[in-house]
Length: 334
Figure 1 (cartoon, helix red, strand yellow):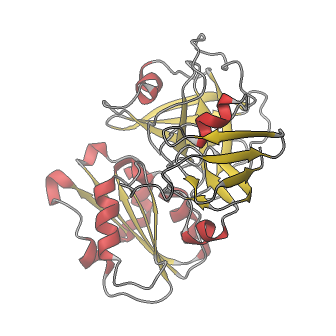
Figure 2 (cartoon, rainbow, N blue to C red):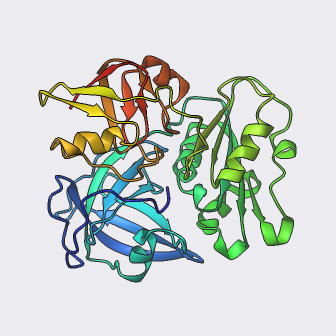
């Protein structure tokens, strides 16, 4: 994941300290490595050398930066190493200060708040995987590739970038030989997905992560394939239709014993915070999953791009930064 909007209460604190007011765990930056043009990889460890929470391919973590910003980054290291996390951060000139702060200020020895790991892009069992990466979208796919290779599954990777030097982790991918195809745009043009994918077939899983135009192209190219073949992770939200309801609705917060009316121009997240419920969030666009909340009653109007169709149909969780209600009342586990 990339540099996104923040909503943790901002507060300027000195570099090397953890923001106050959070209950997040803490990690220390132990290495910082330039892995491509405008991409740095960070190695993170527990300050006392303890084990870190286990994770699976496709997972991401929240990093609470010492300047008060919260960002999500895919874990791209070795999931079998219980003491180390690795993330990679792309400098985004049009971002909102998070990636610039990491590139310009963060150094080994600094402490960061940690949320997660969480996985909204899980790797499901298959005998064949086709991986498609665009730019920094390679990060969640690296652990998947390692996993597929360890399991002896058939797999290959199509990896596009603006130019060769902007494509991170090329050296790590070299060991996989011709299973990996690098396609710098300034040398070969755009990815030819239809040709690379080949004929539709049962049982194959296609995992794609990258910018919105690449995801749209993958969705088009995979449209003749069996249902649920393609799995994607988005950096930015897709365009949405109008909400199911135009008027206000009530949200009962069961654990806190409070009820709040959510007006059309207010998010559930802001309404909940307005009655004193402190909740961590980040993107406010339905792309990161940080504000996922259990639904106890009522029918959510899902407007995120994190939950899959089965999770939406179950109706037992929602992302309250963007999703709304189809019923007069929602009951949340808050």
